[in-house]
Image (cartoon, rainbow, N blue to C red; front, side):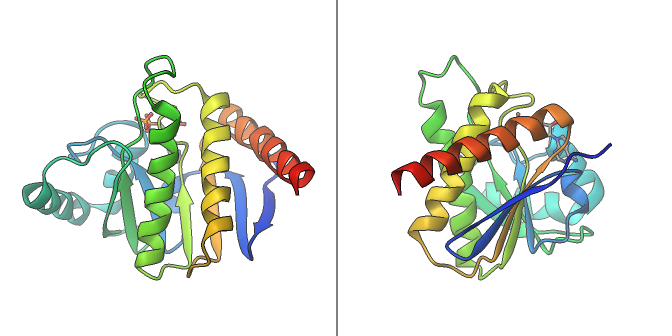
Length: 193
Ligand code: ADP
């Protein structure tokens, strides 16, 4: 059975958590958990290029030839090719090295730079995968809290074109981790507020 979606509203923006396939989302953009080469890879990156077709990789190559490899925590935007989403925002999350090498700050930056780029392009909706928790080895329970907090902080601090932000989690364990994190982070926020 599919897990029940969860939703909160932050500064008039809907923040949803669902279990599903990122490549099938019809938000204005989907975010790719890319690597600095922007040349594609496994996991969600491979799935996006496979579903979106060669136009995405073409633009990625042009970006790298213009500005070099994409640093961890930064984001760039390309066409969505054949995807339902019009754009793909490519960001690079940190590789997990135990947690004391700036991983939380870099992971938060990957989410916030993606949101900023979406807003700079006047997009209204955006879907994220669970960045860094696959091949990059970031423990999902820790990453989920960083991810949810980073998105909520961004939405609280800036009023933008964005109306909907969705976390699209592939497997039930990841979905559960993000649901717990959403509960925890919004409960803490309520206590403070
Ligand atoms: P990273 O290299 O940043 O760790 P991965 O792609 O290896 O990125 O994994 C990130 C997350 O994306 C994992 O939770 C993985 O299960 C998930 N994932 C893989 N394919 C999809 C997909 N089609 N839709 C959503 N999430 C996906």
